[in-house]
Image 1 (cartoon, rainbow, N blue to C red):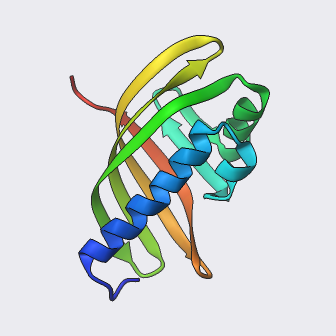
Image 2: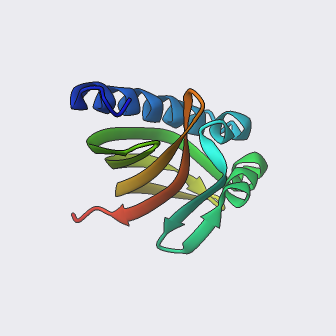
Length: 128
């Protein structure tokens, strides 16, 4: 993919992220997990959340999503590593409390065979 056009890379990761978002909105931990490397971590305001902690929260119903959308702004390729910068919006509930998020997201993907798996997601709240 590194020798393909920037437009093609952008489109590829936009499709990948949209498919991942669909799995998250379906609140399907197995489907969500297919996009994330076993070592994946999510970094946000509350600190670091390992993949298993995130998937367990979804499986238990502690965390649910009812919407998620992404607008890919940048895709940078470094061999078998891609850094994708996204503006994301999502809503759902955590511990029964509704939330709406508008965030900048930096995702680091690693090519594993023919697939790309996310190894790190960093969330930054978007300015109002």
